[in-house]
Image 1: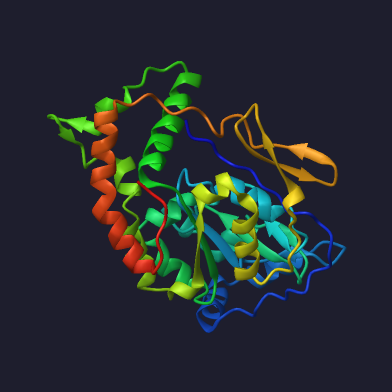
Image 2: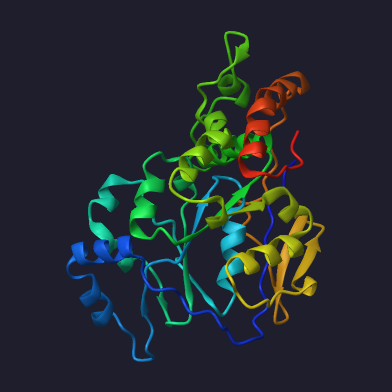
Length: 306
């Protein structure tokens, strides 16, 4: 059984972060957007807040813990987070509408705040890295990853329960993982867990120092150290304490404690994975062994994965 975490940020200090000005490439796109700056002025609130393009994007991975990460960051006074997955860079019907449309999806924020959006599909979408770079080559990217095998099971579980809620039948995970007696390498969930393939695409446009990798498995077991690293990467004032987290024995994962108020992730998070034959699970671990090694070499660090 896999569990998904929620962590939190205690709001106690005044921010010192001032977002950087748009990079030259971003300025050009702003000019091409035409009415973008007018949109900002027209949408300004009486308190001086306005919609801003994101300075940070959580790019993935799907079922890696992106929602938990966003929930944590959105509680920080220096952060304004988009509520929904925007899918600007990966959906043509959105991207074709330009940065003016993208800006309209952002929350109102003060000039001192960091605007963040999350769309997990960005990490595995081939066109996205170049498009993000064209908007802002200096943007800071967050990538949260879990054990690739566990991520595959979570991927299947989400789709399975979506069908259950709609009272629609859905094949067993074995039917997706096995074809003609062998592991079905065409299963999309497997491809999403080939982290080195997708990371290579991002590193064509961004140096590794612009991408912070959050260990999603450690985030589940011990959230505090991982969130501290995220704060440092984003140059946010440290405002998290170990007391902001408590382990919920009923749910089986950590929840958020903020200003005396307790809350956990939605019940759809942390669902039990399907029972998988141990031999098939071993095949899954063996399949990811070499891809994992390539990923470790690519990013210069290792993870405690099977």
